[in-house]
Image (tube, rainbow, N blue to C red; front, top):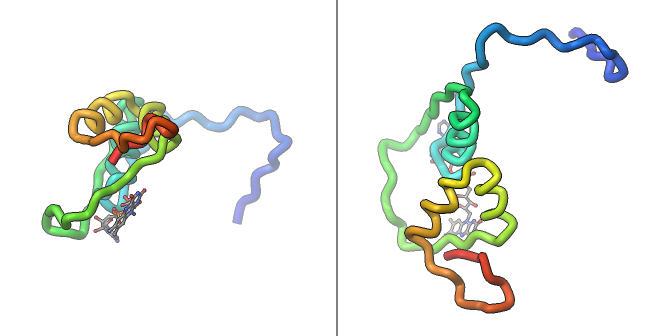
Length: 98
Ligand SMILES: Cc1cc2nc3c(=O)[nH]c(=O)nc-3n(C[C@H](O)[C@H](O)[C@H](O)COP(=O)(O)OP(=O)(O)OC[C@H]3O[C@@H](n4cnc5c(N)ncnc54)[C@H](O)[C@@H]3O)c2cc1C
């Protein structure tokens, strides 16, 4: 197996075209990752094993840091989240969403 010298100053080879990324799973992480990569011009293909998604009657809460990370990946994700989410109502932890 080839090894990489971490002290090497040689430039890494630049791909002539962007890599094509395969994402296994169309859950929230797969979708957020896909949006972030697409925003940077990197083509992706999502592979999802389920035939479809449905509501399961459970709420999902996102911490402020999770929401911040989503915004760093793509600000539109936070806009979409806020359009359907309910603030947790706790003044001490503003920015948490349910
Ligand atoms: C009742 C409940 C409440 C929860 N509440 C919270 C909460 O409040 N806050 C929180 O942060 N988290 C919560 N979680 C955890 C939450 O599910 C995860 O944080 C979140 O869904 C993880 O997202 P994910 O995309 O990594 O995984 P998932 O949502 O599990 O998505 C993975 C997807 O990959 C697909 N998949 C798996 N293997 C393959 C394969 N080999 N090929 C193709 N597709 C594949 C699956 O079908 C699935 O659609 C809760 C979970 C449950 C069950």
